[in-house]
Image (tube, rainbow, N blue to C red):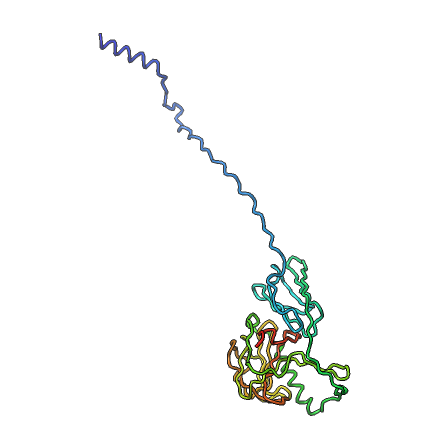
Length: 303
């Protein structure tokens, strides 16, 4: 009786559970389960952050015979100051001179690669030059033929040397004094002959004594060395500091470097003398940027 009851119960339970036929009578493989690909939101479009187009970190001596340096705007392809071309470093850093006779302002003009033109005006302060008024007529007369035959090739060498643009970064440095001593002549000083101005003094004269060594105020390349003595400058040395900035050293008694040599700031260049048109031993140091005459003391600071 118990066996019958168990069989009956099993039969009843099997009748209550639905039966699934797993056999595929079509002979085909069962269809794979559908794949669900998650939806990923697209990233928002990149927003370009505009770079301000402006001159930055401008500094220097904004006065006659001074200079300005800083960074040109991003995208600058050409830069000028009062129509004079300004060379740019790879990082857009630049140096530009302000002439001794500059007007009350100088204008930097940058042309950008997108065609825009940006201007920056620099206020240039005037200076009171040391003037000597002479109650005589300004000297006139032309130089002799013999003098000009000698002078013409000298001037050609000086002009060619100052046109050189060496691949050197001395123009980025803070200049040091080539020698220290008594200053016997100031930059910009001038004689006035009965109201008619003569030529102004183009450099600074330093008189520490004959034979005293002088050094390079900044890195550079020697573009002219004249141990044979020029008619006015005597033993002359010109060092190119790059980007149109150069130094000239006049009246030396001897030169220690030659043309084509690279010199470093503080390197020995020669000795003080009185060669050429000089009334006593001194170093005449002049600085030019392009056609602009600069006051060396503004590059070094007071002695």
